[in-house]
Length: 235
Ligand code: ATP
Image (cartoon, rainbow, N blue to C red; front, side, top):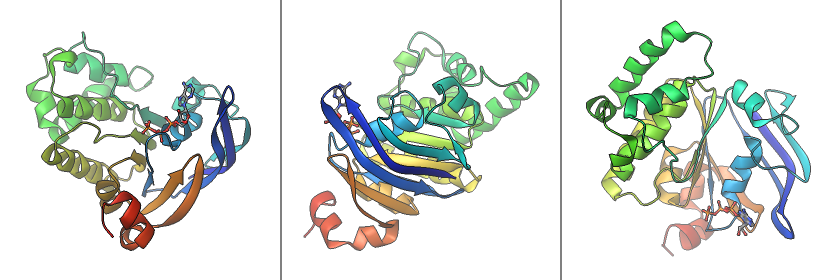
């Protein structure tokens, strides 16, 4: 569904991505794991068109997208949930969710979608009229994911959904991501929590200083000695 081919990207003199190649299969969860500053967020931002690439190629369903504006890329069904959630703190939960649907042409169906996601995220229904900024960290993460889903994406880019959350909340979020996948959505997940990401994903890439150093089925990466030592605190 998505292919990156030797993608380079710079911040001024900083060479953040040094030839990243990866692919995401339709209906799968693919994860990118790696330490702070490895280039995971930059990779997602290049896909969603927020960050320019210096060279290389990004294709979505056979179409080159790195030349398109972020608006056009969202229009193709690629929606990013940014690191740090970025919900609207002074809008209610429902208003935040409705913002996620602002591009949809089928306005009549938006309330149906809202009800559907209230079922998947019951806490958001409960907090419906509460200001987004008053939610807990885990609830804000759920709101950010649900807001992205309101737009009816085909490929969801998730940047560190577990960041700063307690283990039980992380488990809850990972279960929700599993449920979303079972509905047929394709997901590219960026995580520093390698254990949680690899348990959830079908396939994984390990990124170090702007390069893919390892890729394999997620179940095999969980058993890989190098991954165990560097990212799972074992070995
Ligand atoms: P993290 O989990 O900390 O977000 P990451 O793997 O997502 O890490 P990136 O945020 O993609 O890493 O950063 C990749 C490299 O680019 C790092 O060296 C980082 O310092 C640099 N970088 C990121 N954003 C900027 C920026 N706005 N200006 C300059 N350098 C940047």
